[in-house]
Length: 248
Length: 257
Image (cartoon, rainbow over all chains, first blue to last red; front, side, top):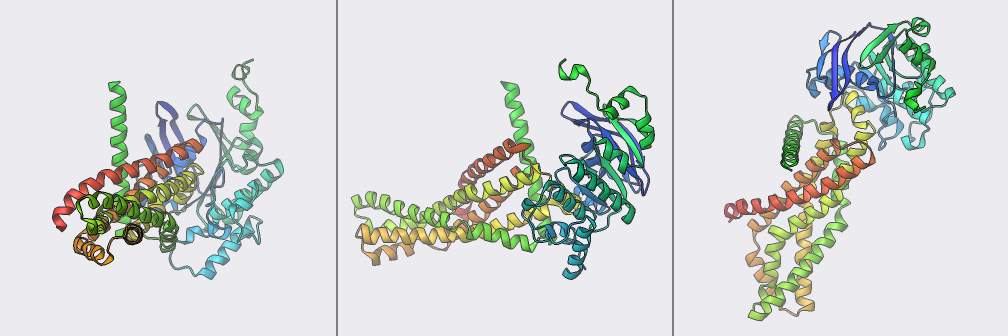
């Protein structure tokens, strides 16, 4: 479904991605872990063409999207749904308008049908009766749910999650994890989740990829990653800071 | 020093190129009927209706002060009744379009840059792109069209109010004979002057929209980035209006006679 090969990305003189290689099969749920500022979100944005690589290829359903124009990418993006770290809801619109936004440029759907789908998507993320609220009236967890409803309302084939549980308390984070699993199982979508929340990674992923120093450093099932004895993987899984980093 | 200048010039040239590409994208989108009509109507309301007070006050007081100053000079050579003719020509071809555009650049240009800049830093522009909507179609086209529509109408309003206010000052404060005053104004202020002003305002509308959108969509990270984008949008739009006004005058005056 998605193939990434020799992907490179530089910001100024800083190399963020330095030859990333991996592939994701249809229906798979892959979690990308790695340290903050390590390029996870940058990698995720390359999968949907929000960023243009400086080298390498990103293939979606066999098509290399690295060299497509913004207009050509719009067709590719119709296969994707994406939940952003801060939900990225349009603050000038109501919840219903946010969730139904994707239907604005898809002709042929009656307003009643759009309303039905919006209500259905909101029900799937356990939010009912908030269609007329504005994003500023919602809590952080509710915003993420609405963002998820917006990402899945048009039933995409691939859903990308950028730090879905960051900034949420453990209970709300748990509910978001459950929703990700529900969406994956009910809609049979391919999921790519970027996170540094190891509990979440273990629950929602069939496979975990660890991004370290601009490359995929480790890959395996959650059990394999959690049982790994590699010092870099172990340090990340256990969440142990390097004493030199904190100035001891 | 030379390196700084080279780097500044290169950055400026890149910005100009990006602005030209944005203008091309917007133009193509308009031609291919990718206009979101609901957004366009809202933007026409925001630009046109909400700018009324600013433009009316600017037009009125500019017309008043111009009439007063002209009278003080013309009175010395006994040309009192030509006062409103000067006000009419100046308001139509220069002051009306330029001052209305500068006021709209301050109000609307800043608002566009701030709104789009905030959308960019909170990833709302990226969210639009993931929802298969081109940011130029949804964000730039309605603002560009709204300014192209509203700016000539606002300018027309500023001109009318300016001449009206100037007339009031001439007749009721300075005591000039109203018949000769009005007759001379109509004799010298004709269709070419009005057309010059309207053509200029159409161009200025595009300048404000494109610079505001460009600065907003390309703004730096965080509150500082949005703040800088807003300031630059107003400054660059104002400077572009003043410079392009000179060249348009030089081109349009011989053409329209």
